[in-house]
Length: 327
Ligand code: COA
Image 1 (cartoon, protein in one colour):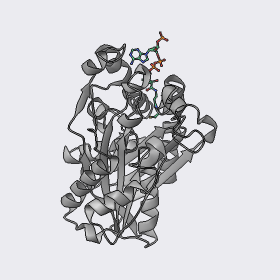
Image 2: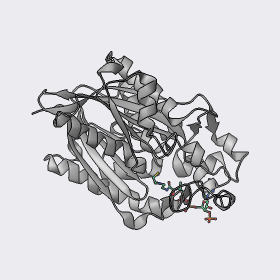
Image 3: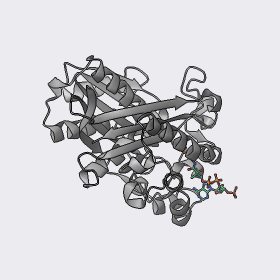
Image 4: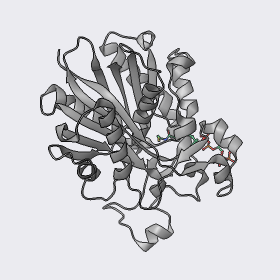
């Protein structure tokens, strides 16, 4: 059976960092609170003038170099992001130009922290249906641009970064993306949002004065729904494949909060060595978080040929998803 397979990964993190100690100087918080409540120690932050497409381009270049593939051979570029360079055109087109990927078509996807998974599902469909043979699937964010550094409940969590996978067709038995499940619920859009900057509330002086141009999050309410949703969708994708958590060699979850990841791992009975946690060094990079963790696991020898990998996500507002990949 023809499937789509991840043949390489790549990533890029901006040079500038923001530590918990730095944040202690900015808002009423502490290294102890942030570490205990989130697991985060440091975040990477884009410099002035460094756009989401710059991060995405460097991550894509890394993935192309690691696979020894020329950008002219790429058929499609999909960028998952909530922080595009501009409302128009799509960030994927800036990435295409920077890569010189003249034969590709490109577009963006917004599904918040599940964005990479949604993009992966679209790319998987393209490859399976012969619409594209080689697809760059990128999760890239400059969340620092929409983070309120006066709001301690959000500014300690979010960060910038980008990562990319190169997807190709494979006829290898039982390899590649085995299954994906996606969910959303529009009944909770107030749990996490940027109130202004769109068609409903354009960027006015009042919006800026109200700080409505930044992320507002009901963190605790979101937290309460996260573990159950991730467990449900993970069970769903696994059972469709006649699998259980016992069959999973590695879980690579969205990195929103270490306590959420540990809650899922405990319920799934997955030991520490089967769970990838990068939130300490990457923080929450929304659509970039899963591919960043995947790339980290790949480059640090955590993934073996033939491994069954469970990816899962939970994000605003609300989206959640899971995928099973055979490496
Ligand atoms: N430093 C110190 N204290 C803080 C703080 C900070 N950075 N942020 C919040 N607090 C305080 C609150 O004001 C509150 O104080 P109070 O009890 O005096 O009112 C207390 O800590 C508890 O706040 P709460 O919001 O209940 O904390 P929490 O344990 O839920 O942790 C999050 C907050 C945001 C870390 C957590 O809710 C979370 O990770 N939520 C999920 C986020 C998510 O998944 N988002 C969608 C996907 S990106």
